[in-house]
Length: 467
Image (cartoon, rainbow, N blue to C red; front, top):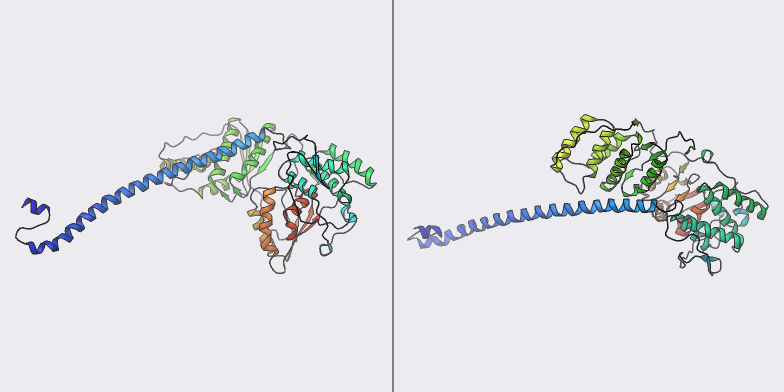
């Protein structure tokens, strides 16, 4: 009986065996599937944990790599983030084209300049978009503009200075002068600017461009008063691109014991940006800097929006940044609640609250209108990194105006990669029926970059008057 019972058989009833076999077989298969299912679940869990560990390491390595680049760049001259020697002599490669051994020689451009005559170049003729004719492109000047856009300031200066000395660009030579004037103005090199002004006045027997002091140029004032607090405003997205802002923050920290940091514009954060900011804040705590935090609670809200209790993301940086900011704000009860959530999520002991040893002051961000409803859209001082937010704002502005005028009076520099993104972002606007785009008051370095990158094909470009 034991044997028959084991195999599902009953003695003396062979006819019923066939009906019992499928049921017994199904039981065995079900049991096997349960075991296999449990094994697959365990394997999937193990794979998921391993994958998260790899992602976490990758995120930390990315943060380390960005910080390494920052520390390496900080060891270079401030006006030249390039490995290229700046004193390399320029060599002639063809008509109106000069380069050094470390400058690309295959640069080609088919984009025409936006200036029809020498009178217009010298600012004696009013600009009118419909009448602007296309003239021959000047590759040397466009190459200098690209070098400036990529941060090779000294190389660009060397090229423009050589072009002026050789004086072989014909009617386009004044453009080289204006580009160099703009370069010295942006670099705040007043001595070189005034020296160039004397040469310009002697050559053209006309008044040179006027030096614009920072406090009267229309840009955000940067007071030279030693009692002024250096201020840094973070952009709408807190990601890996903030490394350039953190470089400025590091420079400010070397010259001032008090720093003002504004988070009022932050609308989103990611783990990499949180990791970079976390390290910067910890360094400021170690150096015992006094801080003025503007809209810090807005930052905590954006960090909370990407966190979930019990969910282990690729890095702990957002959680740790949240706890760090709450300590700076001296919100002990809120800190303890967040530390318990962090403890539950990562199964670690909750960190203890540590009040800041330096002075921390909070401030409310000034109200900034989301949409520019004026006739002109004011472009920022610098365009670098991602241009998604800028293009979004221009698009919103364009919905209110058929003629989209982009005021570049404050715009000093456009990063090379950002110019390509800006072009792609403006194409849909320019292709809309009855819509047209115009850049006004563009400095000559940016104008030649725009020409080289093809923005002239989607918008009219009006250079800044030299007066």
